[in-house]
Length: 292
Ligand code: C2E
Ligand code: MG
Ligand code: MG
Image (cartoon, rainbow, N blue to C red):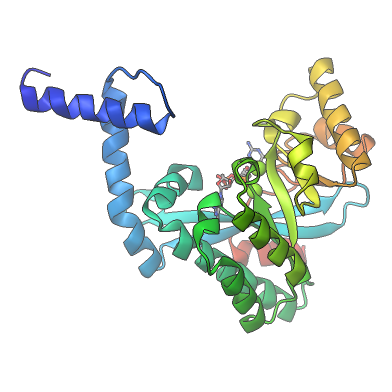
């Protein structure tokens, strides 16, 4: 920067980034921070409109029983179809939605949309498939979370057992008494709870034990490049073994090759999803896929 205003602005961006990274950080300003800040501004100013103007869509990725090959359910994955920028993946906007609080209405919209589409599939004779929905920790700050899920299930006429909620490790690690109560209430409604992206954080079995979680989703880092690495194979096999012994249903993500599929199957992994089986699809494509 060549003038005081620019220097102060850059220092401010670096300060903001340092705070976002946690306590006691040093952050030097780089050009990337300006790009990041203007992208964030773009998301902030467009996302509210996105929800109001139907720019959001839910895609569905099938999950199979690895033993029988039977279709068990679908994971609902959010997409943003921006009129100029095209499709934006959730990784590019969920964090801003969390910061601004917009994740609360967006999250409810996803649940309603997924329940409505599950009912339409059932009415079209395509079966009552389990639907897995990703929840952000921020949604648990909404005192109405459990009540609104119960209301949506009732209004859309979907049995609670058909819904699985995928939770993040950070939610479970930082679970306050209030969060624990919400999880217990969700469980008593009849929903199942899964821990998503297992293996990316602390992956501590002790705190899992005290929470009403019944399924563990192995992160893609466990399934990526399995075939070439005996060490990775040992780790993944051991984690599947331990999780199963502890009574968890184990779901593998990111299955891209036949080799990976067969290894996971041989190690007793219960369920799997990935591009080998199917990409996430819009409801119309999904219906064709299901009929085939
Ligand atoms: P996730 O829940 O772990 O979802 C799995 C991600 O892996 C999805 O990315 C999916 O498209 C991708 N994937 C599936 N199969 C394969 C494969 O074979 N290979 C590879 N490389 N990737 C595969 P996506 O859809 O971009 O979603 C990213 C993350 O965004 C999700 O990770 C989830 O944490 C979050 N997310 C998605 N939808 C929602 C939502 O409605 N609410 C919230 N709070 N978060 C969401
Ligand atoms: Mg997920
Ligand atoms: Mg995951």
